[in-house]
Image (tube, rainbow over all chains, first blue to last red; front, side):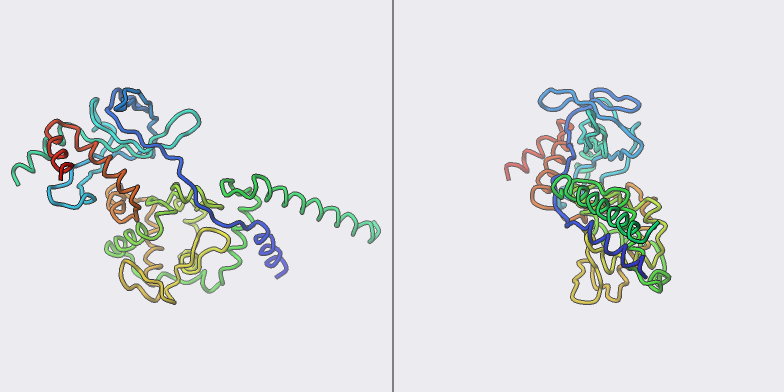
Length: 125
Length: 213
């Protein structure tokens, strides 16, 4: 019983309230310049080249445009893999700064081919 | 050793411990950016363990696991919990990273080795002095996902927490649609989608037409 109260008293001593903070995530948009085994180089719209590390937990998503007349958050984005990515694809990367480098949490990409397919689908419907 | 000497030594030891605790607490001006020390984490985990009644710890999940239960819990988690815990349960979110203590990575043994009853108790009662609120179904807690009185929704969440280490990208994408988003998040998401939509010259005229509207 004494141990229980002592533990609870110590817990009270350590207590601190919750607070809000801004995230440290970085969002990068651009075109794929180079694909490495564990990194991706992206050329941003302002002409800068940014390298992002790819890790085991990086998630790849193929962006599919929203169908005409559908709400903006009803796209049919699909799970993908690094091999689906090609040079020239448009990407939006959500990354976490780790030291001096960036580590990709999520790589969302849209390839000209997938958009052609989507456009053809729209034309048929 | 005489009793008096022993008491003096004990007193000195207590003063040293108090100074160490005060230094630990005051370092960084009580900033929530800090990470709890091992001692704090140890004390907090044991305090939580002791605070959960034994019968609650041993309670079995009365809700049977099923795909529909998983989906309901997944979307509930996306709507209520993911803002701190993240859809994947890692706790790596802007709000989660700003809390003291940080939300635990729900994949890890420290959470997965808790009993169903303990997980249920924590969801229902919250954890004092942390960012974890009580989601007890008694009172007027209004669930956006429908009426889940009697703690049923919390039991379903227990099933989902067990599933988290096996969460698929498809499930995560579905959850993203149910995450609460502010105007800034929505604007940024739309801008990113538009950037991706414009990957081909064919998609560009459509986007521009929408803009003109």
